[in-house]
Amino acid sequence: MAKILLVEDDADNISLLTRLLMHHGHEISVATDAQTAVEKADAERPQLILMDLELPTAPDAQPDPNAGLEATRQIKANGELASIPIIALTAHTMAHHQEKITAAGCDDLQEKPIFPFDSLLKKIDSYTGA
Image (cartoon, rainbow, N blue to C red; front, top):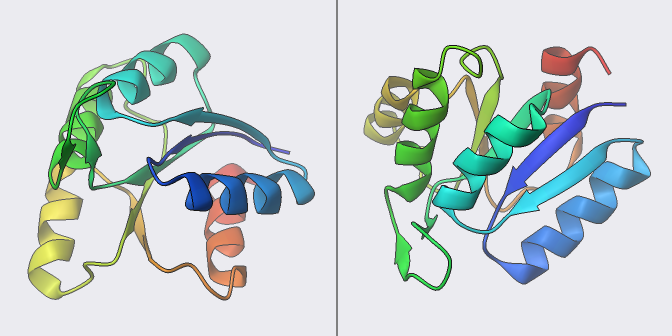
């Protein structure tokens, strides 16, 4: 079992991923914006973060295509959090997008929509040993 911070602003994706991950024994915490993601990462120290890239920068803000990348940079800049693996959740998987994702500090990426789920579960297991 791994403690996972799911950073996602879409209610359907939150519901689906939370059920899937809990079914596989993981403990899930959710943040729906970049600011809350950084705060929860610091307060909760998860074993892994699943980071949507396009989400609001703060509660009640409009979605920003770079908010997840900026949250990743902030988390990785904190020496106490830098070792937490972050898997980007994105529909943008072209090479130039992958370069931006890696440059921001993400350890891996998972293409959305996430189906089948085996790929994501294998990535989580590889990073957490769960």
